[in-house]
Length: 351
Image 1 (cartoon, rainbow, N blue to C red):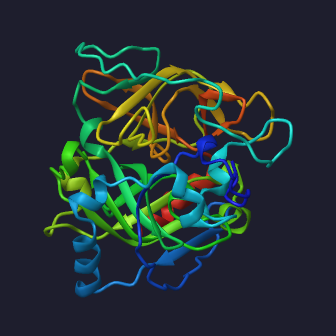
Image 2: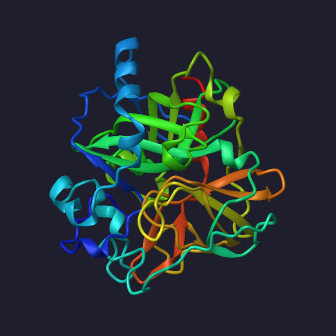
């Protein structure tokens, strides 16, 4: 997955993880604010234009109707333009490096999510609705943002941080690789059907990605962290709680991945999860690990947790949903959290 890959002409081959929402918004020009290297890696920071008026503008923009609206797949290329944000979200081709791929859902036929009613979650599933509640149902949420004049959705999670304001998501949900930063960036924890916002919504004030992501969209560094403004005077961590995050953790093992997939057969209105054993990238193109998962566009940035307790919804985040290979729509890949991700948190929690 790379954000610089040209957009496929056939919209039916869409396989990116960032789902489209509503077109028509205009990004607000903003300035980058690079930070000094930390923990052995370069961190690039973006300071979002602040002030009460700007905060209110963003909050007012994201009405329930706009959040729920979905851009038809056939209009994606028209809205984003060739080489736009969605270009690299079409799946990495295993035999052609960063070539064009069809990614999620290609050749798989219809995939029907199992909206299970059982109280006890499964330890192996490629996509089921999360029915158990717990902490994860509050800390995971949807992200809404504007890039290149169009609106998109991703997923994200609150994480433990000194300032109680940090959320974790994919790098491509924050910055278009070497391209522009997202505008109108808003996090809605515990997003529900019909646009429900039970814990409010939180606007970005500072964004952080690693240098390799900012320069070239390097998939190994597809991680973003965002420091949020308070909502109603409350920090997001105080409103919904946080998940632990770990760096340089052992590879492999059991993991649970969460997100809000918005492309069919999902509609973005429910929290969905995948569960299974992690495996290394079979093509050796990244240090990422794979998780059996059929989640679609909109799930980008959703947290992957190890040491996850289904009864409490609490775990330790060690990766997130990033990309799929074009010949395997049933496996999601997520970046390994090493020193670069650790440096991102060190910068974001001081913001």
